[in-house]
Image 1 (tube, rainbow, N blue to C red):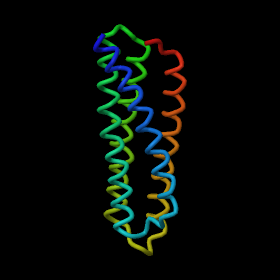
Image 2: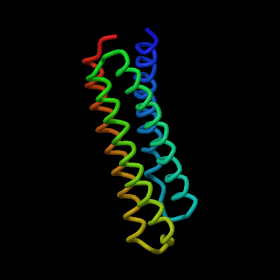
Image 3: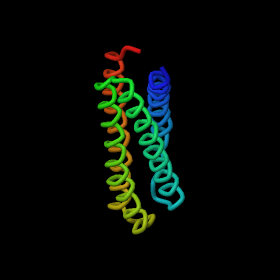
Length: 139
């Protein structure tokens, strides 16, 4: 019974966390991304999102695996893996661009903004995919 409860709680927490990130990250697109403070804040926002996403998804994957819900265990494990890979790819590239970026470097600013948008798009795809996976869930 406990793994089912933990699975349910992690499912709700994951949906809320992904929706929060989507709604919280969209307004940040109005920033110019040209100051170190903007870039540091956005990088921190993404890093926190991915760390929490991996934790919630890993807990959910384990709980669904213990309750013999293989489909949801795999869905949660995939989200945890995507979060791990995206954190390594997006956040590390943000760090690299942030270290070389100046207010007049249009190429680096554009690259940082593209990473920002790519992270948002990845989150929307994950949210939609996970929402569809949840419709197959039976508690």
